Image (cartoon, rainbow, N blue to C red; front, side):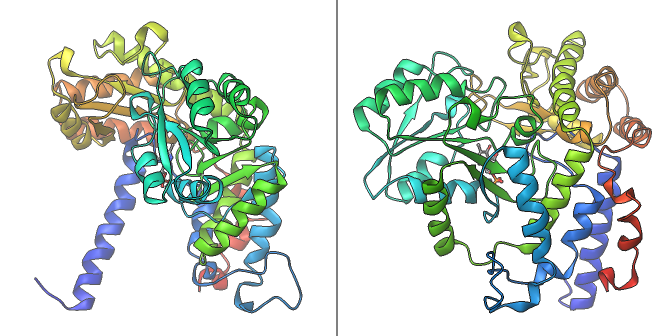
Length: 433
Ligand SMILES: Cc1ncc(COP(=O)(O)O)c(C=O)c1O
């Protein structure tokens, strides 16, 4: 293999070009991914990506790193105000690099001294695989809240765990989530056991649904703070946020963040503000309700093709996710996944879905497709393409071409780059020189 940098770079550039070409045609149903808008992508390629920004108070003498002065205005003048507006929180920390990084900061800032108990969610109820082990790495003692089924947390057990162990923090997170935990009930159970325990809701997967109002705002429901990834149901760049109304929590978080994040990646932070503007301009409530309605419609339509998603008796889902065990239809999930991928339909192949632990199954999500302009009515067509691929009824290339045609016939919801005040700026020669 050549080590000529020009040859290697050319091959890598071709690979990235192929990625672009394929991404525009594929149907991405991976629930932990989303596509950022053209405007946010533009920000990712700007000079902001080469800069440090520390002077968040705007102190005229505080520019130890002055090269970020212009780009930083996007963070302070757009990203922060719009995220405060969307979250309804007085404080939003936009310095985490991703959801797991936000988790690290929150556990470190609010989890207490080494050997303090922390309550998190059992993976059988959708808790993130890393939360308990990360807590252990930080010296905390995790206890896992569980429930009677994959979709329910037992409030009495939660009360018991808090009353027994007096954790500083209950870290309520769900990665695999069809029916999100009832935060109001959890908050009440925690409050009754220990009034000092902080309840943090990690809504990495459902942030866009929360900010669009399809799911309750955790702060209104009784959590003290919430946050997570900005790139799953929220159509932002790959970043993380933490929002709270409590000054003391914002302060301790800021102090942990100051020690743990030096470069917070300014370009994605600016892109996050532009994605938030795109989100607001595109009617977030409709995007969020359409995303959930599309997942439910896709569940129903797959069911008609004898591919039956989990929780059919409950309407399949109340989020963007669907879990599909293809074994009962006679197709092992690894084969189904391979065929779907070949047909340009991207899904997760997982073995840790609650209720299906150890059984390979597919996890699907509708957020990116709905952002790309697909409608609830399109889900019959999408289900037919999935069924054709899973059952190997037509050549993969034909199914992929149909998926690409469907994509091409729809218009992305994220259109702010066409705004008359913005469009000319994006084509300015020096804008990306
Ligand atoms: C609840 C939760 N927390 C954290 C993460 C990690 O997020 P990221 O991949 O952005 O680091 C995820 C990812 O799925 C998640 O679902």
